[in-house]
Length: 453
Image (spheres, rainbow, N blue to C red):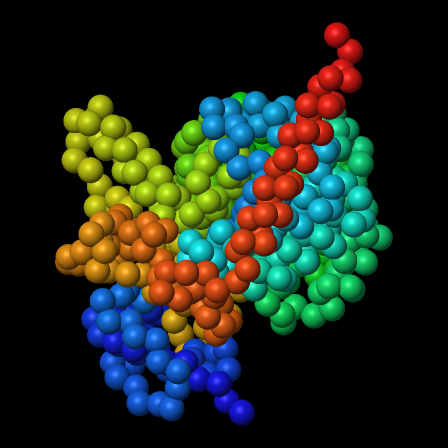
């Protein structure tokens, strides 16, 4: 029996150039797939009245350390250097599988609540074999579309981030692949989150890249961020090792040289930019325009809720404001007009949706309201005081709306948020993540008490 849902009479921003924007339009969903997007559709279906709402594809977050949800806001003033010590060398070694499960469940529900329907979970918290199982379970129970990127353990900063000799355990990666991801067609898919050159010895880097490609796993790696990694020439090193390819996403990329940008573009690689973190923690200027100028389609990501908000509206505005501020300052200094190529609000919405799907390797399934794609859909209440009256629907989404305006969320055709309320068991997720917080803080205190004077 076919299940149909009809989103009726919304202002549809499809992000599909063949469909465009419909000031009043309907979106028909059949069995989890978008069946039609038209000005008016008649169908025997459950009706979601989108009058006064803006209907867009769900946002795509291409890089988030979701496990950190229990320690949200613990490092508000941290630099990147502080983060390595305060989070990776202090909290990460204390994480149990139960903490990872709570973090991924609550963190993924946070995403859905904020209109993020697709997530790349950069999971570098695999301290035991039980940790990745717990991470995957949390994602699965949330109902989000996600790419689980298996990362290293984090039990010692010295062992895992300073010329590490420890490779991600191939046997366990194969176990997780066969157990949880026997195909690449599900709501959850798998990738590999690798530390890369500068952090690991060449033989470790080569082994991890080879393992990923043997198992058909896309690769995601942080490069060219901050005082430390900005000096490594990581993409150049990868090129020297013969490892560049279209299966790799380069996160941050704030200090790539012109030569390295060309290497990424020529190899077919993709880029994930985390603007608020990069500005706030000292990674460097968010390189959204640099990526575009080199023919790439940049995406946006949240990174760490230890230090920044977990919603896409923040990232859109951070990237938009930072890039325009940089160009305006340069032009003022040079006493010349700003170029016609300044970032636009519509570009930012494209970057947060269809570009994100491209970078996550899921553009055939999500990122635009295109018939045939899976129904990952977001309805934004445009009657609220902070959004109305609407003159430009794209501007309303990118520059006016916030999480409070996310009224309706569908993932794979399933309604997860309706009339502004999540339909899942948020009370349980909140209880688990609070218990995790308390346990981690107690373990940190106990560890500090045992430390030598």
